[in-house]
Length: 116
Length: 114
Image (cartoon, each protein chain N blue to C red):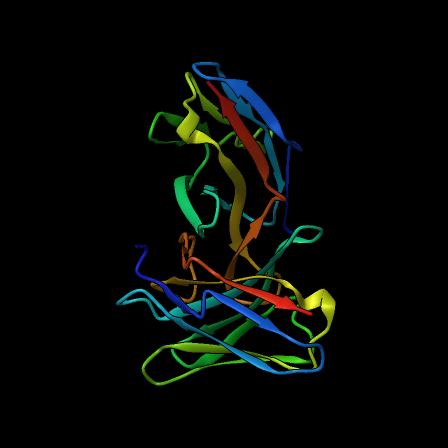
């Protein structure tokens, strides 16, 4: 079945540090890949996405490249801010076996804390 | 504001009781998805509706049920509640039933069973 594995947190960084959150996936067919962010007390927000191999998704200084050969979609940011403190979820969308319905499958989330 | 509205935001109830969570999808979205988020299980897909019909089921307990109404809002019914049902319940919507689309999430309903 489809699955997403992302690095366990929590991750604590100083402001302006470089961020990498690793994400790898297993899926049938050709999935689309997403990063969602959840700020404290809020729902999940789409951060960025990539729909085919070698696509790079980017938003708010965050980037992730769809690597089919390594089945990865690592999230990076060159200089994190305190306001980036949140939980980050990697997800994939792929058809379910025997059904026509796409679903989002999420990783367990990585909590990021950025300290001044 | 994501455009997906969930009510209530917080709910505290006793074991054995029944509750109903409500979700209004973003305007124009026909699909509604329900997810449960707990500390130990992460985000678990429960069920999907598209234009009033059930499209997919995930790890939804038999004590739980859902429906989507003609105006596209959806309700998740949780009955015979147990302490372990305490969690955040999210609703999400998307424009279509199939395809590699991302979802728009509501802010969730925090259910506490005491």
